[in-house]
Image (cartoon, rainbow, N blue to C red; front, side):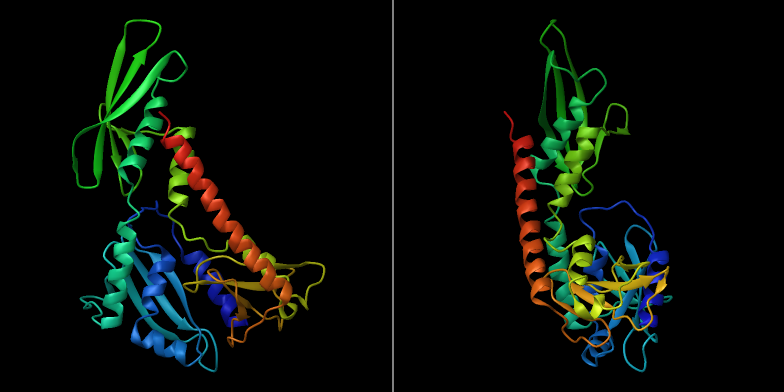
Length: 323
C-alpha cells in the first residue's frame, strides 16, 4: 500500500500546530463534513477510499486536500477544500470560491456547529477555573487564608468575570482581583495586569475539562494493540518491524501500517481501525479483517475509555463542587 504510506507521511508533515479552542471544529469533524460533499461521497461509494490531508491556514481555516487512495485511480486528486472551523462553511479552494450549498453539507454543518457550541464552558466550570487560577496568584497560596470567587457583572460574549477575594486568617487583611474566563478557550486573564494566568493546578484542571469534550473513541495506542491481533496485519512481523499509526486521514478511522527497518513492509496490509466501534478493515478494499481476540480487545478498550471519562467527570466534579 505504497500510495497510502506516502499520503500518511505527507499529512504528518503538512499539519500545523494551533492552540485548540472548544468552539472550533476538530480536524476529524471537518473531515466528516467533507464526507458529505457529493464528489467525495461518490468516490467513497465507488470504493476509492478518499483520504484527507490538512493544512492549517489560520486558527479558523483548514485547507483539506482529498485524494483517492484505492483502486486504479489511487493517489489522484478529488479536490481541495477550505473548511471554516467556526462556522462550518465549506468552499472549494481558490480565489472567490462560493460556499458549497449542497443540502447534505449545509444540514450536517448545522448539526456539527450546534454540537461544537455546546462545548463552551458552563458557569460552574468557568467559576471553578477562576478559583483555581486565583489560588495560584502570587502570595495567595497556602493554608493561612481563604480564597473565594464570585460572579461580577453581566457576561460579555464568551467572557465571564469574577471577583476573586483573598481573606487572611492570621491578620486583618483582605485583597481582591478581577479575573475573566473565556468560555471558548478556557483561558483565565487577570484583568488587573492583563496577563493570562497559568499554574500546574490550573493546567491540570483545564486539561481535564477539555478532555471531557472528547468522544469516547479509541486512542492511537489502542489501535496499535488491536492491529497486532489481526493475522493479515501481523503475518509479516519480524525483527526490526514495528506497527505505525498517526494523523487523521479519515474522519473516524486510524490507519495502521507495518514498517520494517524504517521502510514500509513490502506487501503488508494496511489496517483501518474504526475509532468509534473498533471494527478493523483492509484500508484498500474495505474487507473486514477481524479476529475474536481483536474484537474482544476493542470492546474492552472502548468500555475502558467510557470508564475513564466517567472517572474524569467525578474528579472534576469533586474539585469544582467543593464548599
